[in-house]
Length: 431
Image (cartoon, rainbow, N blue to C red; front, side, top):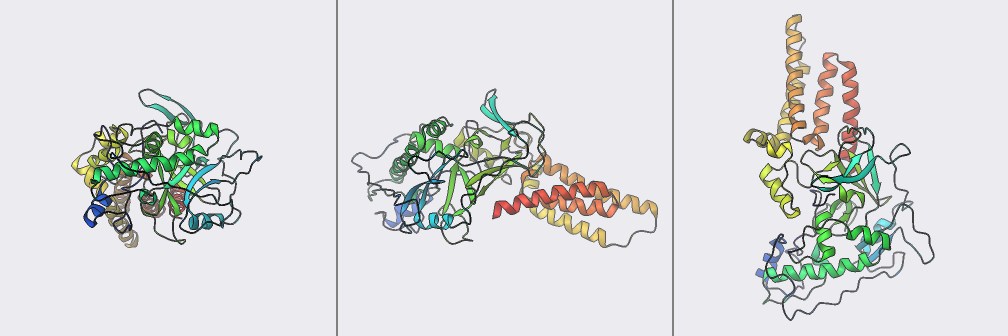
């Protein structure tokens, strides 16, 4: 990413404590307030741990390369595993801070780890280069179809999103702000252990990533993590099928993926593939050779003001068309697009079910009216950047239905193929 970032699927460490956490040495009121408090950003006063604070020794474990960790043990592990004298995997290794039972679950994946999937063709589909005023960016090297894997990579680092797993010494006389600073301090030490395990070239690449948290109490590694972390789908503490939250999920620091800049009109999305232990970047629309790749660091359905608040910790003031041209009408459309699509689909279903008018003129006017209505809706979704949202697959399903019914067979076939690609991406992201 460029050099200021974070994604909506991007989330670094969370507030650090769940209201249900036990054994923190906090009063009930302070514990609840700490759980609700967010980490500050920008120029923060009184950073660092309180005077007299004594760090709690934190010993992560790597008992073996197998699975003999206690379920609740915090472990540092390298995947794929490496042994002294081994040649490094040419597809890269990931340092992972993980609970023992979650590591066991992942290592039980059939044929783990599998090779990272590669895009079609001999040459990479992306290149990193300078972007005036934005640092680095990632660009397409050829035309890319919606749904294509642009590139996939094993992250530098994967760690829990929740800071409460990090041991810390709390006392009731500490304020919430002091407790948050303690969490950042202990988080830095935890991350440093993982980063110090990296190969020299990987560590160098990690430390060159953007850091927009240099004055808020974050350490250099924690700041990079907060700036660049992608929340991962499918990687969660608990049994298979457990719903991911900020308290049981994981986040990753990508390699080339960390150079993708933000836009509320994104053209990429990510999925995390457990069998290959890789983060994959897919095209959410057709991309031309030379186009810059963008990822949304915020929730696309949020109003412009909320998106700007989400981006503020990364030093980003988004000037994409969806932000600059936001109106009350466009904000309402964005907020209600799911319901509007359901209504549009119902309208199309009713139109399809009606008897065909006997009059030729009536038939033409009717089909042109419904087609114009659907195409206008599609255009508005694209203008708002919502063609990168799962709802766009529904939009294409409706459009395919209309094209098919009015006899535009070739357009129906192309739309059907695009629809399948969108629905496949949505399915993969949820697995």
